[in-house]
Length: 45
Image (cartoon, rainbow, N blue to C red; front, side):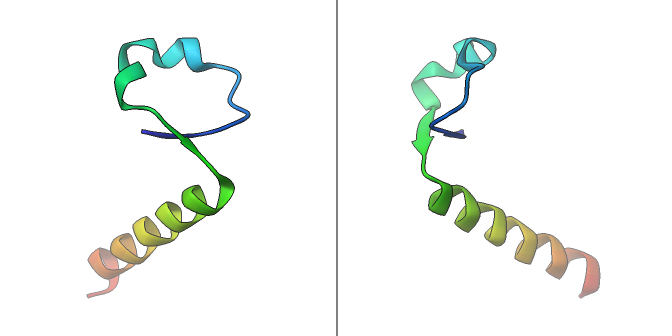
């Protein structure tokens, strides 16, 4: 799970504390872009 550094609700993800990556905006944007490309392929191909 990638969460932005300024996330103030980390307590909501307490059960995932071992799986949380402190994500920079660039990492989150890169991940979102990859998901968008994959979703686009599933819909339009």
